[in-house]
Length: 232
Length: 388
Image 1: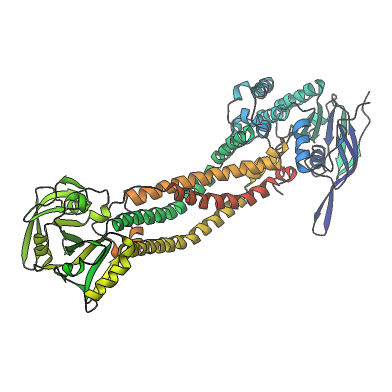
Image 2 (image 1 turned 90 degrees about the horizontal axis):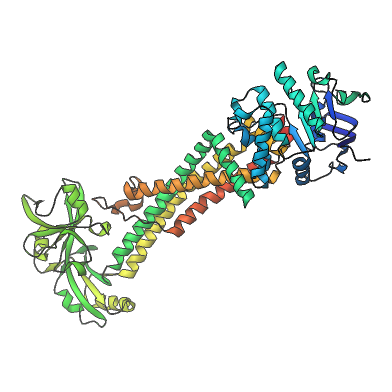
């Protein structure tokens, strides 16, 4: 049996502010299989984004372990965690989408810079993704000129440019109108169907209530409060 | 190498995205380097001019002191000196200063029978005086008085005006020597200087070897009462010390300016705005290592520092060699500021230029490293929440 795409075991993330301790994530256990689309839902402050950050090797847990494809990334040094992020994960933030002042294509190719800039192959793949995501006419446009939905799609294209196996998204449909939100949702299912593991943190029912979602995990105050077994 | 080029390309884009901050830093650096560079270039140019001047001085110059002040010297004194061993030639020189009230400037009047080559000043237009009231004048003086070859120059002496015919104008290959110069035959120079026949301003002595200068000076002092003997090598050393000291003092005064700028740069580079924090968060989230972010930020500083330093040096060059360093030249030249204003020969010592660039670029990049490192160390999770 192959290792799950992401395995989170007894993970806790505690923030200390003076005498105050806050467990943003408290003893969470999850195993996300490869090629699944999971949704983490819950109200603001429930710990969804922090858990996503832990899964994305962007935040080190206070205790517990996080494994990506069977590799424990909990205690990796910064540059090794960076390597894991670069090679295996694509991340789409809620607000941190694109860098203003750069073109859409330049934004999508950002992950290629540290390895010496985009190769012709990378550039071709980036263009292909942008065309696929309906941004053909905006490839050379400045990022700040895109609409919310277009930015979100461009951010997903950027997360996919290095062909990661796992895509993590924080509120991918926030601030989008219904048409744009549905487009993004369809795109995520397409990616799932192609074999990418997709994990979304959201409180948008347009995504969490979609019957195509493999599993919905509800969180509150940092803990998992509802984790129903996947439907057959 | 490819990685560095890609990071440099990204850094250039970053500078463009933060144009106002980048421009402010470049302008600040330009100003600081301009100030330092001006002092350096002016000091260097003056030293070079004086070295040229010193190289053309006689090995020894003999003056006669009366009541502690230089006075005229009888021409016959030359005969008391020319038999001292190693003395090759003794020339009684006729020269002095004349204050032109019309232009509020001192000019130097030199009486000589030498030709242009031995006088070592280049006549740009016309020729040297051959007889009578003919004179050749410096280009600075010619410009100030609006004179050209063939014109008559009237010099008021008491209640009279003595006229001279301008037959030549000197070039500006070494303006410090010739800008304020009037060369005439000795007899006419004596008239202009109010000096009687048989008297000279000083004696110029050439030696077969400069190494014997001190011994010859002792002999002269023994034979001539009130003699003051000036050694060319000592004069040259004095010039060097004077300009090194003045230049050094000026540079020292500018150190606080550099320190203040570096502090300001630190402040500016440390204060990351929300947009910058988010940008770093994005970069780290998409797979940039801390070292990648750090390098990109350092490249930004290197580009800013290089642009500021090079434009500052360019500014200094224009200020010194094209504008004549107004203000600064007064501070460096002090009382000896020659008028009419001399035109310094444009030149730049590559070693000094690199030293200056290094002295500014290295500290600037150094002060940018810590803020860059702090910025690069931001946890992507923290950055994506806007640093909260």
